Amino acid sequence: MESTAASKTSTANSESLVLVPRINQEMWVCPYSHEYFAKCAEELDKEESSQAFSMLSKVARSRKITIVGGSLPERKNGKMYNTCCVFGPDGKLKAKHSKLHLFDYYESAEALIKESDSFTAGDTPTVVDTDVGRIGIGICHDIRFPELAMLYRAKGADLIIYPGAFNMSTGKMLWELETKARAIDNQVFVAVCSPCRDSAGSYTIWGHSMIVGPSGEIKGRAEHEETIVIAEINYAENQLQRLKICVEGALKCSSHKRDPKLPSTHPREGGLET
Picture 1 (tube, rainbow, N blue to C red):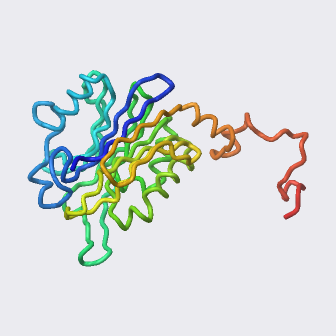
Picture 2 (picture 1 turned 45 degrees about the vertical axis):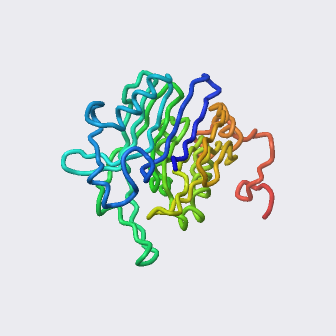
């Protein structure tokens, strides 16, 4: 069974962006299991040292598209990182993001995940300028932390992308909720891409890749089966939503302040009572 993939097109410049999922039993190198991470980890700094790097680079170059290449185990300086690579239409590596927040999860003795046993956390947020806009990158559990998305918005990101593989428990509770929250709070497009579900595997994945607009509207979504999600996005919607609802504070929104001739609706300003 192949992984689910998400594909998007920016209507602002008619360029194409393809997002693929994170590591799992049908992605580039290995199952999502501690016993395979070290065996299958690759060095991602040079094309000749990594099959995944080579494949993603060649596809981006041949199709003249930008690819956000999910995530895979990277071996670097004697440590392992959960890393996402971004390639431009020329096939060159534009950025790497190593997962900042490792997922240590305990539901029961049978449902125990501890990424920190295998991976080292990254220490650098990643914003990359591409042909399809400025993109902030996170991986899976990174979406749980609103401060990262806020930083990306402050750095001018048009879109935040999180390849992820939530399990059945966290997926049902949080996958759509957190995706919409990051989009609404920061008034940006957010895309999450998951592998499709393989119930026979050791790690059962929620699936449900989706693309959410700055108002929280779902622009495109999958269920848990293998599929491709395609949506057209227009970054002008980010600015339109910010004009409608200002969330950055009164000082940053001075050009949109209330007309002083209108009566206040705030009780502290002598306006309407509550």
